[in-house]
Length: 307
Image (tube, rainbow, N blue to C red; front, top):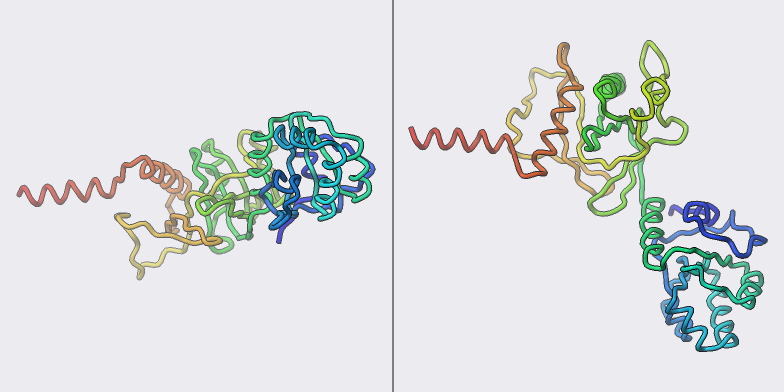
C-alpha cells in the first residue's frame, strides 16, 4: 500500500499547521478520500473513517459552537483518540485553544486552510488519488504527441529513444525515456511519468546520456501524461501477417485498464517517428467519430453493390 506523508500534504495543499511542535514527517496518509466528521461530533462513531483526513467546514463549526466548547472538546478528543492523520479547518475558521491542547495531547495535527470546504475537499481527493494510485514500472518511452500520450515499447536497442528524439525535433514533448511509471488513477485513466532520477534524460547508444530539457528547452518536456495509445516496435518478420486495414482495435492491459495498441514492424527506411505521429492523429480522429478504415470499407462496399 502506498502512503503520503502529512508533511508533503501540508506543503502541497498550502495549509497552515497550527501545532508546529508535532512531528508531521512520520504521519502517513493511506486513503485518498476525506471525511467530514458531522456524525462523530454528534457522538456516532460506528464505521468511523479514522484513516482519512478530517475536514471541518462551516456546518461542523457552527454545530460545535451551538453545542458549546465543553461538549465539542469531548467529541473532538474522541475523534483524535482514533489517531486520525490530521484535522483541517477550512474557510479560515477559528480553532479554540482547547482543541489545540487536545491536539498536543493526542499528537494529532490541526491545520487550517483559507479555501472553501467543497473546493478544498475536491482538490485533496484529486491529488491523493494520483499519489496513492496503484502503479507499475515498465520499459518504454512516453511522449506527448498532439496532446495524446503515446507509450512506445519494444525490445532493448530497437530504437525507442531515437524515435523519441525525432519526435522532440518535430515539436512534441518527452515525458519519460527508458523507464515509465504508470499509475492507475481511475478505471479509465492511466497516468505516466518518469522516475525522479531519470526525468528529462534520454539514453542514445553511441552518444550517451543527453538532457532533453537543456538541449531543446522546457517546451520539449512534460512531467506527467495520460497514456492513450501504445505502440509496440518489433523487428520486421516477413513470415508474419500485419494489420493493413485497422478495422478492429487491438488492446493491451495495464493494471486492469485496456489501452489501444498498435504493433509497428521495424525495417530500414521506415520513418517510425512519422508513423507514431500519424497513429496519434488517427487515434484522435477516431475519438472524434471519424474512422478512415470504416470510411474506405463503406466506399468499397457501396462501389461493389452499385456495380
